[in-house]
Length: 104
Image 1: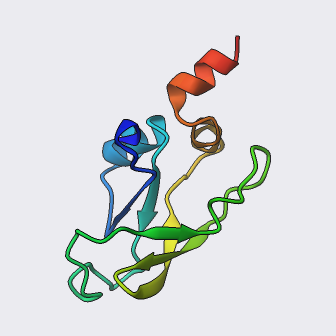
Image 2 (image 1 turned 45 degrees about the horizontal axis):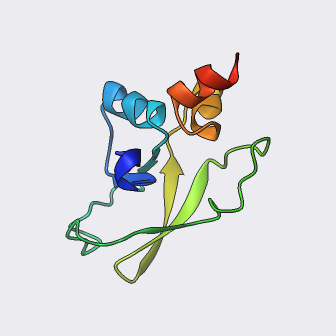
């Protein structure tokens, strides 16, 4: 996924393993606010989303719990689904492989 240029995935919910796999590949899982869906927001899945605030995140900065997402002309607050400190480490390094290689 990240190899294709995908940096984030916006969804109504995530299965635990899918969310974990995204983080392991260095892709940010973003969850829509409760009660909202792609349909209720008028999103088709073909939009390019812009995650505001992610570009300035340094390697030692805390990962925010929410980020503003611009998708299809709509701004919304999405929940960042990085749920553990270890997942935050993996994401900061661009995925689990990069994390492991940098530990040596």
